[in-house]
Length: 375
Image 1 (cartoon, rainbow, N blue to C red):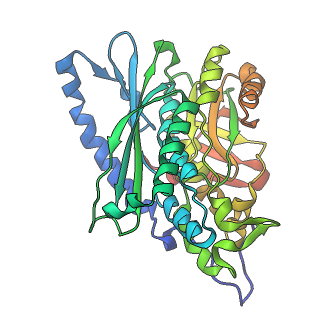
Image 2 (cartoon, rainbow, N blue to C red; image 1 turned 180 degrees about the vertical axis):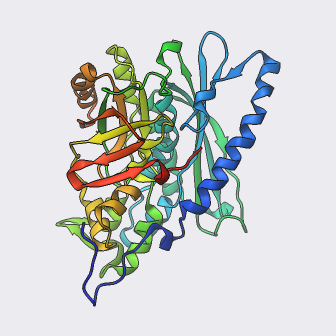
Image 3 (cartoon, rainbow, N blue to C red; image 1 turned 90 degrees about the horizontal axis):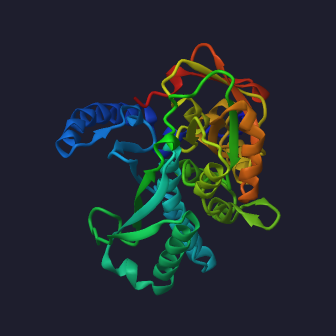
């Protein structure tokens, strides 16, 4: 993953070059959170209250008495554009996987707070009614959505399918999902209040790029000799590799609870890459000593975009889609439970006392508190 340096090599391709600049986006998120916090008093009218520690986390949690209620809404992003391009080139529909990607964006966030996913709602906004005329594509979206719900053990409650000509580009679709879940019993709540030095960091394998970094991946295709069909390894093209469905991690978190393991904190490694391991506001250090294998498509992106290790791990998941912070004596069993659910896992590091930072020792990369500002 060394950056290209020869005179003939193109300049490194940054996420900002693809139109995504978190330095511009994140300040708005912080402002929105502060405004939203002021509305939490409205819950008191109904006899409820927010779990304050969930502000700024991946899911919002409300105390409704006998249990906690958690909720989240997430957008797929631009991965559907890759599916559209590949349909044109190969004649194959990839929308069943795209449906799983969309649900994973919501469910994988919801479970970070210890919630069991309960209901998913769909938002499918097309650039015109004609999008739905492609019966094969529409059916694949429905079937993939239903199958992902079954994998996660959630009910598909309903949704919205607007035709938004003039807002969404013609021939395209904007996909999103909301998810509601329960933290029951309340002891399952995972917002980092028990996170402490000595805890272990267990990383769960990703299936590839998942649904984050696609703007960069789509920009990179302009540099590839055969475009989307460029082989990243024998028999596997770039576009097809990008479309590997995002791993659904709720079967792992549910199995952990049944095994008597309650994570002390969780992080869904999505936008901001491994910097997401710094999400909790506590002044703690996180030391990584073991890296998961990097999926071929992510290694390919890093190399052809001219990324060094720091840039790659600050943007992409690099083989780790989810992090579990657990008691040290439960780390190996956590790995076993995850693998029993078909998801590879590694005891990758530990939590230490000290200044807030992430040290990835095998690649000599360090991220500090200043590298992730989400609150």
